[in-house]
Image (cartoon, rainbow, N blue to C red; front, side, top):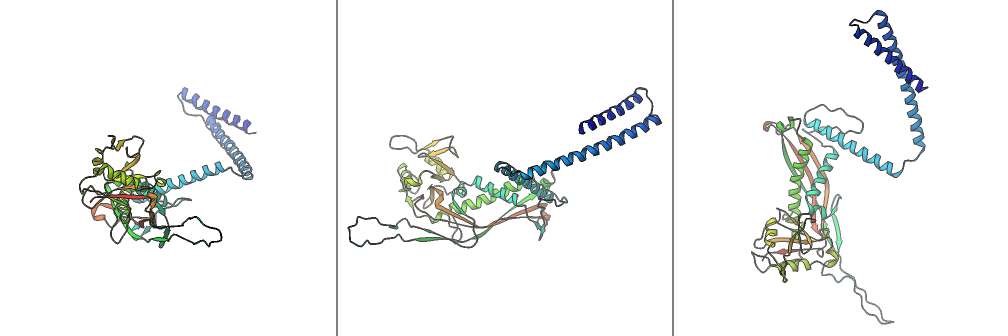
Amino acid sequence: MSKALEEKKNDLITRAEDIFAKAKAENRELTDDEAQELAEIRDDVERIKKHLGLEDDFGKLEEKAEKADNTPTEEETEVSVEEKAREVEENECRAFENYVRGRIVHERAGELTPASTSGGALIPTTIVNRIIRKVYDICPILERSQKFNVKGRLEVPFYPADSNKITVAYQSEFVQMESSSGKFDTVELGGFLAGALTKISRSLINNVQFDIVGFVVDEMAYAIKRFIEHELLVGTENKVEGLSGLNNSVTTASAVAITADEVVRVHDAIKDEFQQNAVWIMSPATRTALRTLKSNTGYYLLNDDVSSPFGTTLLGKPVYVSDNMPDIATGEAVIYYGDMKGLATKFNEEINIEVLRERYADEHCYGVIGWFEFDSKVIDEQQIAKLVMA
């Protein structure tokens, strides 16, 4: 039935083209009979198209019913979920960009339209998630730490390094065994509120070629990265402690120089069990100072390695550098080494982002502000050691 109708439709269209071609070749207007015939052809073609469309719709309904009877495979379900998540993210990015550019955004199924709240607008969830991913990508200390996403206070029990734990000893028959147990201690993680603010030029926003969403993500991510990384590495008194509370340390003999033996002592302060995922963290200037260090056999301790994340290894382990780490100076903790899972980072509050459209109107820019609440402390000193200058 469909094939016959398709052929009839094509014949009618061919006939109409012939009528137009003949009138054009003779350089004249259509006659009344030709115009009448074309009108009839148009009506017939439209009627056939409608019939074919209905036939196609019923065919799809039958196909859909058949699919409903078959349970989708796990692979088909995963593809569907990924496509849906990608579509939601694209819609939310578009909605956010439209809001910042001052466009009117209509709500559609599955699309989150930013709503004004006290002079600002909430950024869609997918934008926030992209900011968090960005922070993890450029901040290895945060990525490698042991993260907890819980509200309120968190107590993490652990065995102190000097604990005797459980004692195993030879025993005699008919003699009562003495019990022994290690003394548990706890690390308490609270929450400290922090915020980051960046401004966006309205001139840039008005430039339609500019990736406004990417700009906001990059700028906010960089600000958050710099702050969180500083707190994890250096800490702030009476706030986030980070690695500053670490007691497993090696002190140099000199206040202005580091020796190869001291680097080796820091390396060996970590048990072999935790060496597999261990990394070095130091400032760029400290890494430069270590480039001249040699072992007793004359080999350089620090080597270039293209397979290493930052391009260098020290005693076979990756070297990460951070501008937040202090350079070599009296009393400073200049190197950390170990498995950073020994550091716990807890986020009480997910990053909450708002766009401030009116507050900076006199500066011809918009503000983007982010809030988050977190805390960080060392929970296992066996996994991390530090080198402190004399």
